[in-house]
Length: 330
Image (cartoon, rainbow, N blue to C red; front, side, top):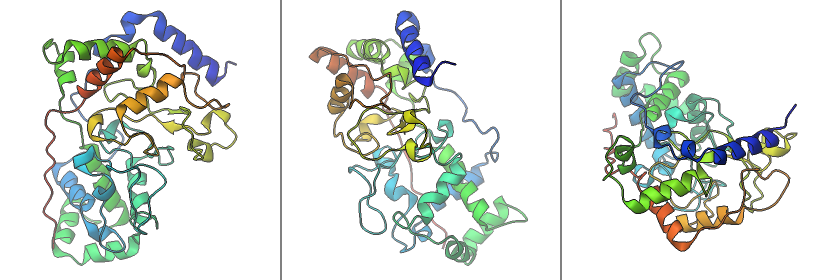
């Protein structure tokens, strides 16, 4: 039985054996519909309720934090600091994963400990170090707000305000948070003038020489898999959930790259400030250890190639991303 490592090496070899496939921009074409299969069906009323809850500080223990405190729309639904500051006024251990394109991300969290967005939504709300909310108290307060009570009764007839319904509403809103069209998308759709020649060369580097697309695949540029990329961190990531799996140690889920220029600092621990630092890390191949992904193979780029790669990554940032704030019920 081949090991995971040997299979990854085989895939890596095949990846570079067929460069025309690797550079096929159609593999990154964005879908036209948000997937709502096997989850609560979408409705605009349900998503609107979820958006109100996402931005409501009454879901936190001290009424001073919201989901958006760590998932800020202005910064690609992340935070512009190394790691977010939680309810105890202390820095959290990990950067906030983006909510962008959450409908295509499974499982949730850097270590994948939540199988669904509904499960994910509860974690930060009730975590003492994060929002420090108490679900029973939250539901009591929401029930006492006439407009909220009316919204829940309309959207969830017969059940109204409940923990399950609150988490369903937030998860439904999160599934609607989709990165807007970018120059790259227009290029994929046939507009050859949508991106620069430098960015086109950068795409070839991304899908070829640098090997980025071996993990950053598909329209969201993420394979939803866990990899140890050799960061010098004591956080074992997925290894906490799979202690007997060597390859899970120090492994974290591949983040998508949409709107990436809004989302510095980078990595699960916010340890790299710029995209140039990110490229340098991958060039060096990361810290050598038994769990290091076999895809972490050192490479070398010329300065112009680095500029081309960053030019390509910039085309993944939406030209316009408006997220108007909701009016909260009183």
